[in-house]
Amino acid sequence: MPSTQPVNLVKDELSSVAVARAHARKAEVAAMLRLAGGLAIIGNKVVVDAELDHLPSAQRLVSAVHTLYGSIPALHTMRNSTRSSDHYLLRVTHAENLARQTGLIDHRGRPISGMPPWIIRGTRDEVEAAWRGAILATGRLSLTGHRQGLTVSSPGPEAALALVGLARRLGVTAQRREDRGRDCIVVRGDDAVTTLLAQIGAPQTSTQWSNRRHHHRLASQTGTGRSPTFESANTRRAAAAAAESTARVQRAMHILGDTAPEHLKEVAALRLANPGLTLTELGGRAQPPMTKDTVAGRIRRLLNLADRTAARAGIPDTGASTFGILPG
Image 1 (cartoon, rainbow, N blue to C red):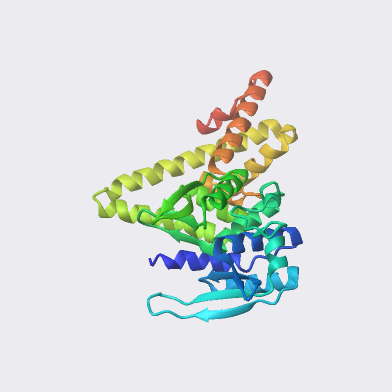
Image 2: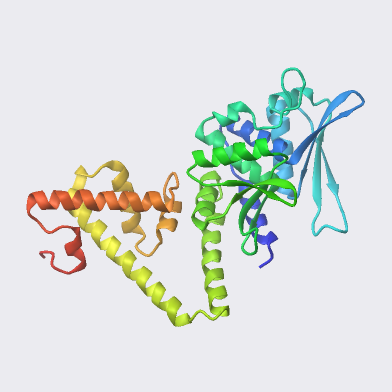
């Protein structure tokens, strides 16, 4: 699969996300201009440029800059025989106010290298919007090689470290690294990538990423001598574990009923409605999405609570559901 295909999938989805709050839209714009943009002085006037590799993303940025800030950007298509696809240059002249409001310069007109403080301490939807803008600006997904996972290019370490911190606020582990002398933010684990994508407005790409990674692992293991029988055994064990978990959760809800805490009821409902899904996939379907560890922890707490309740009442606990000894 070409490495650009998942990039187009995620950018297509993210560029169509509807955002109600103006502050969240501004966070997305600020991140896009910070990561894909630059400042110049032309004819004693501040000019803001942003170069993107995805037309719907560029059009989204043009619309947002005009709607939110009243500026009228020009959008140019840049064709280059050395590139596999066109790039798009957004340019705003007379852009001093835009640069100041989006955190590219301070009140004295001096360039700022990091992300705006109001995003760093912003609300959750502003944090999600900033990451959405970062991916639209310079993000790329890759299934193979040393860039496997999600990578976002940054103009410097300050913006990269800021995005690492913002990812942490979303429950996702990201790291700052250097790639060919340029700062990058990388999200490597499958659970982290699927969780982040689901949270920022790309649930379809999140699900497809999870499925593609699963199929890719199977293909690569088979191609390197791993036995298909071994994989089949793993699949059977995973299915058996999911079935056991579902049976225990069902028994737990029978024991606890309405006394179960709301957040544990929610994860129980997810497990019972989707008995064949992995914990990662369950987390992607939660609202808001949860990590695999969060889902596992809540199921574990639900079962422990039910088992303690059953012991006090002198009735079979959740483990009895897996041995067929529950009373009819």
